[in-house]
Length: 293
Image 1 (cartoon, rainbow, N blue to C red):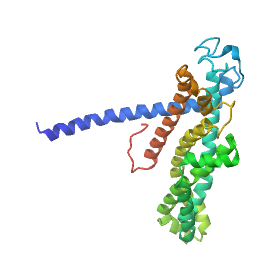
Image 2: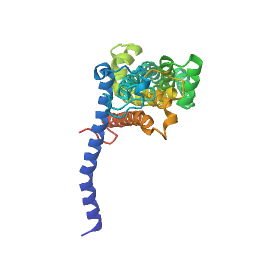
Image 3: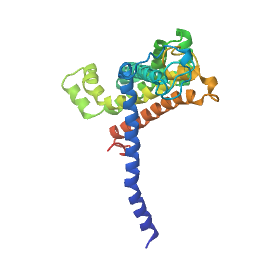
């Protein structure tokens, strides 16, 4: 039998298996995202412990001991409770940053892409200037100026990631502004502002939704890094970055204390990235169609 025929048959047989594997991975990622989201919403109902209440006599309890399913930390706080309330803070930060970036960046990018000319030049160059700085470094500087806290971390990250949304919004609007429905709206006597807001902007909503999901995952990991470095959320507030920072000296003697919040943070961010890729594939037909079937 011809060798090329064998290769084609093998490739044809491997494709369904690959799609099945991708579907399983995407469903698992979506499940992790939903679990963290549900944990954030219902955290007070899922535990009887106070996330910030120290109990030195109960420090370093083992899993399941005295009702502590995941044990306790170095000052006797329930680890599961702190992870649950940490998930709440993670989603508050991620969604707040994404929402602010989409509102401001989406509007600026749409205006730059639709109007063009000098407006486009000013907005684009300003976005490029911000994007020239590493996100964590810029967020550190802004947090240092405004003072470390969860609120300033959200504001700093919104400033950091708004230019990313600006570029996506601008590119999407440029691709829409010369289409026939835009000309038809103008022909009906609609103003440029009405055409942009009522007709063009809704058609770029898919792109903004995708970039918004990307911003959520990036904001989560950068805010955790800020908190780890002491420039974000401050102890004793339950935050996954704070949890890692508080016990980093115990990495060799009590590795579980460090690895547990680190694993939850990594799994959440990875899952959000996979879900973002899936959304991108589904919304943009030019991309691969692998995903949640």
